[in-house]
Amino acid sequence: MSIFKRVSFFIGVKNILALSLLLIPFLTSAQKNIKPADTKHSSASVEKQTVQIHHANSLEFDKRLGDGAERLIGNVELEDDSVLMNCDSAYVYQDNTFRAFGHVHLNRKDSVHLFGDSLHYHGDTKQAEMFGKILCKEKSMTLNTQHLLYDLNADMVNYWDGGTLVDSTNTLVSTLGNYNTLSKIASFKQNVVLTNPNYKVTCDTMNYSPSLQTAYFEGPTYITSKSNKMYCVAGYYNTKSGVSQFWNHAIVTSKKGEKLSGDSLYFNRKIDSGEVKQNVALTDSTDNITIRGNYAVYKGLKKTIMVTRRAVMQQAFEKDTLHLHGDTLFGLNISMSDTMPGNSSAPKLLLAYHHVQFFKKDMQGKCDSLTYDEKDSIMRMFRLPVVWSDHNQLTADTMHLFLENKKLSKLDMINNSFIISRDTLASKDDSLQFNQIKGRNMRGFFKNNKIFKVKVMGNAQTIYYVYSDNNTTLVGANRADCSNMLVYIDSNRVHSITYLQKPDATLFPTKDIKPADFLLGNFNWREAERPKKKEDIFGDEKF
Image (cartoon, rainbow, N blue to C red; front, side):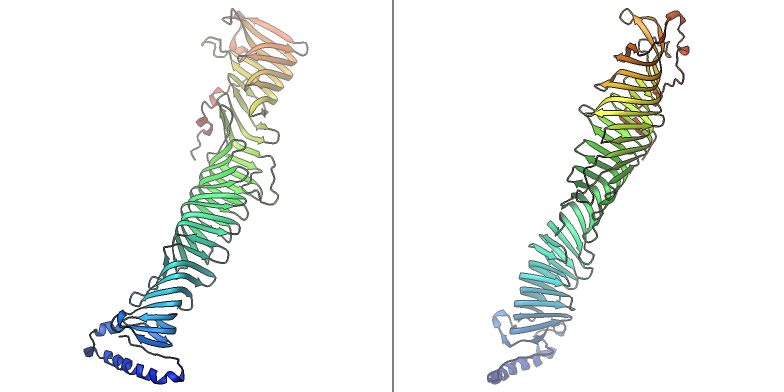
């Protein structure tokens, strides 16, 4: 039998006599149970009784519920330690438990409030199981569900049949969940959806701090907004500040087609900026361009990205891919959000510096720094640039490569222009036998990415070797000087020359040819620097 500190009943004057008759056996029984010798329960069992009745309109004994079970009806108020419970009616049992029904309200330390249709409370284990239309409320956070267990010893609220948590800005829905009333952390599993006015998060597992408004993810996670989409396998996201940290192949995708990914991604949605580490990739599906590296800094307000540590740009063409490497690659007019202020479809600009090299099966190149402007499709190369096209080596102080429909259409060579190709018909003993074109400035014209015509402008000079008998017999070496000339190339050999002014040309017979003497001024054969495969463009870089 329960030991009660206080019992109060509010009834009408007409029922005073009935109340007196009801209390006589109740008080007598209570007094008997205070004496251990007179009760069939031990004193230890009595000491476990912690549930106290503060108020009820009426009390009844119901033998159907067990010996000593009481039924409380009307404005019931119970207490266990610091937990207050109110309901319409309740059954109180000898094992320190009770069941409450109708407008159930449980409040602990004026912090957590539970409202539901019914409640089963265990005083020994300090567990409250609630059923029906349930509302759990703490400050500005509310949780709605249909079946809930509140473990007061563990400070944990659990649900299994689906629940919805709402705070000042977010709504969280999941199949399973719990809330730690001490750490103020909510955990969700299965079909987790966080909805905010500006975005939506879906995942399998999430921990959420209502006070910090921060979500922590485990498992595949998607964050969708009007401006972009995010994906990760693990990480956190502060829904108030917009700051996030993602791991395990994190991806940000814009609606314009850019995709930024990496092993680790720090991102601030509000200013559209981030930092990416390891296996970084920025993909532009519109132009089939991907920039890769192991470290990147993205600044959305400035619409820039900087990539370093084994950085490379890859652009897919019809049958081949261009691989371009530099110590640092810098992109302009790149935005992962099409809702940022001042955002537009301005043409992209790529800067590469230093130790730039690029590889394509039919063309390779090298220089100190390079720019590529999407506006005019011109690749500009600076400081000791060199381009290799089939057997031809092209050099100048500065070079401009023009692309049309993703194909090389022409090449401007500015100051100290030089084209060299080894004479492929020469014997192995004549390793210094080279065809050469030299001038102040040149423009090369390409078909199918192969050079077929060169216009030399200023101080034009050529040396090329002449053969007969179906290119089997060396006739001699032709050397010509002219202000300007047109050189036509077929199968990587000089086919013909058109002199635009009166030339000074001489054909030297074979007996007078010493290949070492037939090298034009500033001759520099740089074949050893040529990348033979795409991996060669990285040189000794180990990042």
